[in-house]
Length: 331
Ligand code: NAD
Ligand code: UD1
Image 1 (spheres, rainbow, N blue to C red):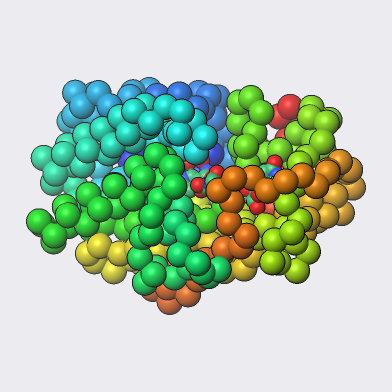
Image 2: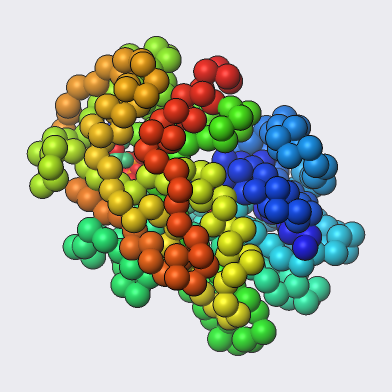
């Protein structure tokens, strides 16, 4: 199988490329390097000892997308490319709607023209919005999104449903990720956001490596056992393997799966585990709640287990160890 991986030099795309190559599939990457570095390609090749073809192109340029499909035989597309920063999407909504939607429309139109109808889409648990639940199953359906980034995900999901309704020869798998964290155990690939991180794990790493002074724990008065927020953290290698399973085992037609561990961990649990497994100190202080945060949510991960034969295998300890190993190797 020859898989086109869009955004394949990014955090999740690079780990998924490794797992696809390990399964004997061929990988072609398209990435415009907006949020990634070309050196990631060498790292993917180093880990797998396999060659990968890279197109340094922007998916919003339809002619370039067309050129890729004219030059390559492609069996399926895994679509990671997009912008993903929640706060930035609130400040720059047009940039988010434009990049995320136009890229996807171009890709689907060109795929349709070339009769390539196997598509896996990176969606997010953010499409559930706040429906007053802690555990979210796919059957709950989309809720009200709270930021333009989330709205692009919900709009693309709806677009894919409409596309499938118009032509049921498409095979479309929508994967809703919970909180992807961690890094490859080689320490060669991982996530290192530019600037001051907004998400918990990258912030913890900057504090542990003394690049930032102190972590603010946003609230310890939530109705959770230790009062801090609870999320479903998923190791990026488990997440990457979920994509391989989706390619191999998803039933025909349009299917939606949560990719999460099915369990929650609190902010303090994550911080304490990080300190313990890595033997480092993470200074923190309790501050007020962050606006828009929910107390607790995690995946109902049963559907992916039953239909794809996939579940997470790595623990919070693995997540903390591998994240720190990557940080030490790369910064
Ligand atoms: P990332 O930013 O590390 O990777 C995205 C890649 O896409 C980058 O390498 C970027 O350069 C590329 N890209 C962006 N726009 C492009 C364009 N127009 N043309 C070509 N390349 C383009 O992000 P990630 O964390 O790997 O996320 C991958 C996907 O998963 C995204 O769609 C994201 O919204 C989704 N997702 C991520 C998370 C998360 O927490 N990381 C959670 C839920 C969903
Ligand atoms: C955020 C995004 C979500 C995205 C996810 C990806 C928002 C509103 N949502 O979710 O769309 O899919 O990242 O991983 O931004 N925390 C602290 N201190 C910090 C940072 C975070 O205490 O400095 C806490 C938060 O309050 C939360 C938990 O850590 O309880 C996780 O936060 P974060 O990593 O930002 O993820 P989400 O808020 O779940």
